[in-house]
Length: 169
Image (tube, rainbow, N blue to C red; front, side, top):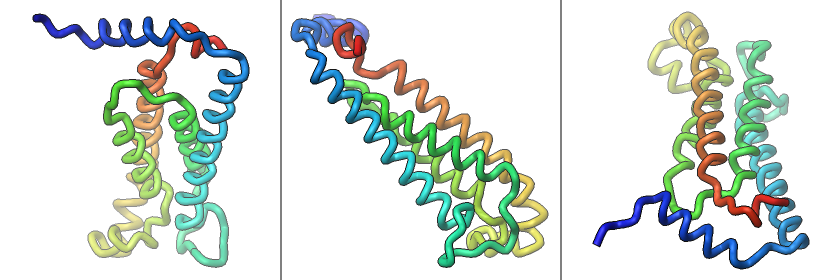
């Protein structure tokens, strides 16, 4: 017997799920859950990356190098893309779609962090290496991070669990 392709299996699954229409209250509840989940993820990302890197100024953390002009927009874009990623329903089939998104957020942490406050960079390159080698690479890391997050959001959007009745609202 021939194994059905992924698209045939998805079609069979969506045909079965189309049999039960979603009422307006359930659709509104799904949207509310998605918005809440995405908002929470975006705020947590903003705080988890922004506070230790001292882009969000707190008395707990400090920076030796002032915040550069591009770091706050990168942090905001990362939080918005993370919120979008969490706000999209994940595919019915279990796939490892979270790995690139999680790696991109970690990469953002290294991209927007103070170059001489990062102990790993200081141990590997020293102070002059951190300022001379690591600091110029950080905007490139930010671009790679945002590209990876954008691709993860697009991939999740294209593979979301969406039927005519579930995406109508």
